[in-house]
Amino acid sequence: VFGHLARAPEDPILGVTVAYNKDRSPVKLNLGVGAYRTEEGKPLVLNVVRRAEHTLVNDSSRVKEYLPIVGLADFNKLSAKLIFGADSPAIQENRVTTVQCLSGTGSLRVGAEFLAKHYHQRTIYIPMPTWGNHPKVFTLAGLSVKTYHYYDPATRGLNFQGLLEDLGSAPSGAIVLLHACAHNPTGVDPTLGQWAQIRQLMRSKGLLPFFDSAYQGFASGNLDEDAQSVRIFVADGGECLVAQSYAKNMGLYGERVGALSIVCKTADVASRVESQLKLVIRPMYSNPPIHGASIVATILKDRNMFHDWTIELKAMADRIISMRQQLFDALSSRGTPGDWSHIIKQIGMFTFTGLNSEQVAFMTKEYHIYMTSDGRISMAGLSSRTVPHLADAIHAAVTR
Ligand code: PMP
Figure 1 (cartoon, rainbow, N blue to C red):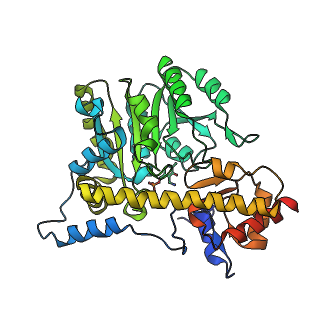
Figure 2 (tube, protein in one colour):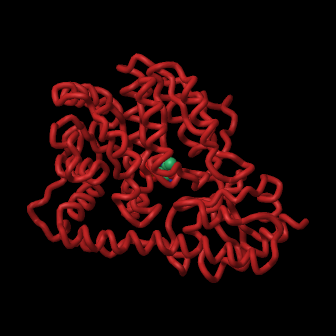
Figure 3 (tube, rainbow, N blue to C red):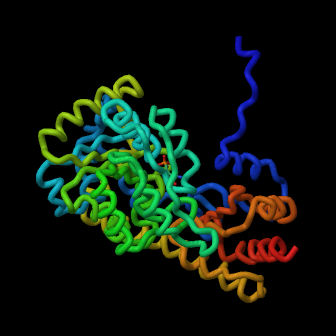
């Protein structure tokens, strides 16, 4: 009965790894996938995560019962505190409802399903470009997707004027997807002053912010700094949604740990919103998994572990920042034509190189370097050893 099915294309991001795995070259390099690698090119499990797991395993009182539909209560409370700040009035006034979801993606999907069912405006504006999965997540949840200007290829920076114009002409009440920090794929973030202007414009038009926070702590190395955008919006007392992921900042990719928070105007509304979120979640996956959320809760509630986490997180962020500098220096020393300063200006895991799809194809064919066709490279996949190879490839691609 399925004989008529055409073969579906590989996912454009995950497909890069599929192609990489097939390559036999000893110099092959995977800069496609957004997962942290050590200087030796290995995946990293944080020491503090190992310690938390140890604590959990040795606690014989722990059982494997189902969690509630909304997940682990401690995890939810601590996740809200992490993103909104310990002294957030919204938390103190019980205006926030937080539910544990399946990492960032699942949090976005649950939020989108909730909005499609209960919010009067079904249009969501997403930045151009954005993470490739965003349009699919929102469309399949029943929202209608439009884009707003974000990236300016000429400056390889923010097209702030275009952004303000597009949001300024969006219909009142429309939903706007904002990357909380370390915009993927461009690595370009608004400044705090620009965030303040975006907030003012959005609130004046009644646009509903939906933050995607997949990189808190990963951009600057500081958890509070990377949450500033969200906190600017929450401070004015208005509503917003936030999808949080612990994939990157705790290295818990495969554990699928994340949270959706909805900030409401009153505690009463927040509790009714939560009751409706349960109706969204129950028929989707019933309730979330227990292990990853327990690891996160163990770390967040223990002062020592929390402190150790911030040190390891900063070390990851610093290694990425150092890769930016090394790649920039390597291109400068080769005299590679063009201005490459965006490599050190952009933020977070990715550099949006400005290389076009032909140049990317050339680098893959001749240098066995794998990346998405939009020219995005994961700085976390680079090391001091592989920077020269990448710089050679970029140099060859732009001087060809
Ligand atoms: N949003 C953005 C912007 C991302 O880059 C990612 C991960 N690539 C996610 C959401 C979701 O990641 P996960 O579901 O693994 O938490």
